[in-house]
Image (cartoon, rainbow, N blue to C red):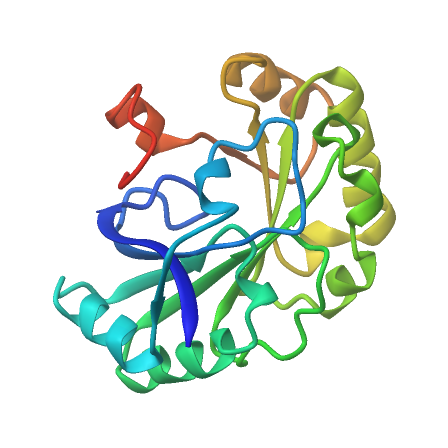
Length: 212
């Protein structure tokens, strides 16, 4: 059984899959408290659902892309059977994790989107950097950048760990704190081999916080 905050059908707003219709399974509970978190409602509560119930709910939307997110989805051990079953049903499956827990149990075919917490998040010390050494070409790394100090820290990590040669790397500005255009200029000036990410869902549905 899993604690589920919400299941909804929307447009993927982040990652290299941005713009694609996607079903989101947002699991409840998180071990981190990032300063800029926009899904704090998922820290607690939710409803208890079995893997079969979740898969049935997902199937009802008729969409092939599914993202399991949170909260922190890896806090719940039953997430692995859920991922396995979604794959078995023929879905393209992504999981987004805060990067503080091991990712080695995630099934091979799942796209792993790993957040790396910059200093501005307040959770830099939670980063499990050994996760980044196991990344594959299909996986993605996301840095959410609040200011120039965060940008320089993230750029150093990309270079130090050779991330761009092993996976897709996205830099995303903290919504309401850093302009995406400013971040874009920094990326270009530094010749960084990364992608600029924007939260597309916040442009499509400004002011809405759930179900988007």
